[in-house]
Image (cartoon, rainbow, N blue to C red; front, side, top):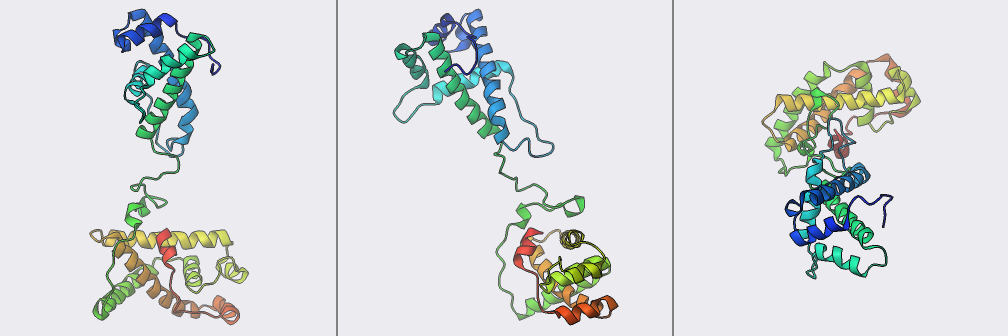
Amino acid sequence: MDNGMNHLTTEEAWRAWRTACAVDLCPPADGTVLRDFGAQRFRFYLDRYASRTGHRAREGQTLRVPEDKDAWHFLETHAQVGTTREGKRYKDWLFARAETGTDTWLRVVESGASLLMRDAVREYLRREHTAAFMESLQRPAGRGDDTAYTLEELIPDQVELLGDVEAREWNELGRATAETFLTTMTARERIAVWARANSIALSDPDLTRWAACGKSALHDAYTQCVERMCAEIKRSYPAESPAIWVQLARVTLERLNGLLFQKIMAEKGAARFFKKKGSRPDAGPSEHELART
């Protein structure tokens, strides 16, 4: 296997390495030849496989690249410790295949060493970088500093079933939170949250006409409003667990829907819409919706 490269090494260098067992123990000229070969092969496979890691997909992350002088060390370590279950050492395999190969001895050795370096680079990337599809649990899940909660905080926790007293306390806390938050909501946000709670599509033509915007803007208003509410709950109760935040957000949205129903009923723009669609003020937010926020 040539991989499109000319010979960068000599047979004398490989035989010296085989005898000395380590490149640092080889004659200086042979050691330089092998280190240059290792650096060239390492960069070749690093460029090929680096795109499969997550460093390019996320802002602020860069690929950690070792110095050229260290590249040969990865091959040497892999050849020594990379022993198969049958007890075959890769260094012995490297030279054994050259003795029985049909190609020239040097070409077969360079080809086998390239395969070892390829595996060494893959192991380096697995150890030093996450895969492209992986996300850190500490990554902020919001859109800005005001909603900088993390994925770890959204993992469900064990929440005990509430008794009558606890349920009344939760409802009172949710009501107070909803009343305060209602004063910060825009007219478009009030329409979006009320419609979503009553299972009315945010793309409904009457709804978008009422809100004086398109369906995308109405959806963004809903998402940003719920994210802002969740961030406010987190700031108000920093010592509580994520499970408590989610529970309080759910209760707050339920109470908010009742307050919005009373407020929206008084608006002229709602009359035609109520007649056409009706409303279900008891409808609550879905757990999936809260999990996404």
